[in-house]
Image (tube, rainbow over all chains, first blue to last red; front, side, top):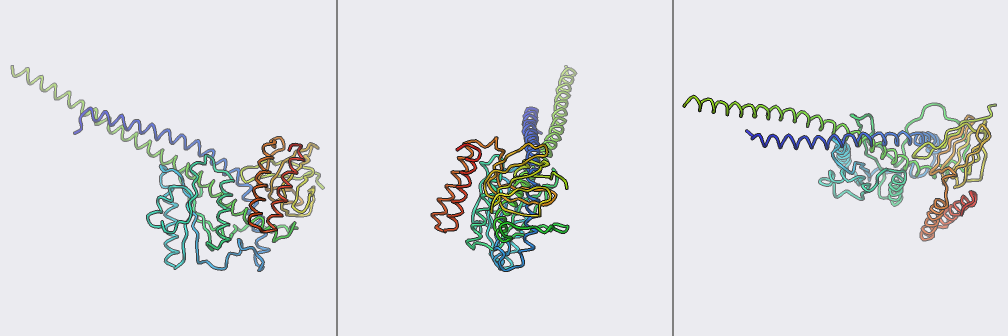
Length: 289
Length: 138
C-alpha cells in the first residue's frame, strides 16, 4: 500500500503530464488547420496538372518516342521505395502504419527476387526501418529544420529522384505516405510516381493544340508532375501527422484524467482509513484506563 | 460571344487569382500570345516573363511568372505557374534572386558541357533579366 505522500506525488506528476498532453493537442489542432489549408490550396494545381498530363499521356503514351519518365525503362527489376514519415514521434500509429506498409511491400518485392532500394524522408521512418532494411538505404532527406513544407522541398526531392532515375539507379519509384481522411483516420497509401501513372479523368477531353509540340510539353511537364506528386504527398502527410498527433494526445489527456480520478479515490480512502485507525487507537487507549 | 472569360492563376502552393478577364497576355515559350474569349484550345509552356490580365472592368493586373504552362480554351484560361508573384511584390531583391539562380544554372550547365543545356540556361538568364527590365528595376 503506497503511503499518502506517495499518492499525492503521483497525482501531481500525472496532472503535469496531462497539462503537457493537453498543450500538445492544442498545438497539433492549430497546426492541423494550417496543414489542411495548405493541402487545400495546393489542390487546384495538382488537379489541373493531372488532367493536362493524363490527356497528353494518352495521346503520346503509345508512341515509341514517349519520354522515359512516362514509359519507364522497360524493366521492373529495381524498385525504389520513398518512405515519407514524420520527423517527430508522439503521434500514435502514424509512422508505424507507413513503415508497416513499406515493409510489407519491400518483403514482397524481395521474395520475388527484385532489388529494393529505400529512400527515407523524415527521421522516424528511417529509425524504424533501420533494423531490417539498413542495407537497402540509399539516401535520406532531412526535413527537421523545415518549419513549413514548401514546393521547394518537394522540388528538391523530385530532382534527386529524376537524377537517380536518369542514372539508371532504379526502374520504378513508389511513394509511401498517409493520405489525410479525417482526424481519426489516415490512410496509408502507396503511389507510383516513376514511371508516371495518372488517375483517369472522365469526360471527353478537348482537342488541344500544343505549343511547342506534344512531346516537348510532355518532357517539360513530367518532372513537374513528379514534383507536384511529391508535394501533394508531403502536404497530405503533414496534415495526417497533425491529425494523428491530435487524436493521440486527446486519448492521452483522457487517460491521464481517468488515472487522476482513480488515484484521488485511492488517496481519499487511505486518508480516511488512517483517520479511522487513529480514532480507534485513541478510543481503545482511553477505554483501557 | 461572351466578352469575358474565367481566368485562373495557380501556383503549387496556392491559387493566386481567379477573375473574369477580357484578355490575358501570356509569355509563351514560343512567343508571347494573347488569349481572349473563344480562343482555340491550346496548351503552351511558358518562359519567365510578365503576365498581364485585362480585367472585365478594363483594369490591368500584372504578374511575374518564372515558368510553367497555360491551358487556354474557349471558356477560360488556366495558368499553372511554377512560381508567380504580383508585380507589386517583385522587388529588386526578388529579381536579383531569380537572376542569381539562373546564373548558377548557366554555370552548372557549362560545367556539364552540353550545348543545348547551356543555351537553355543562357536563355533563362536573359528572360530573368528581361523581367527586371520590364518592371523597371534592375
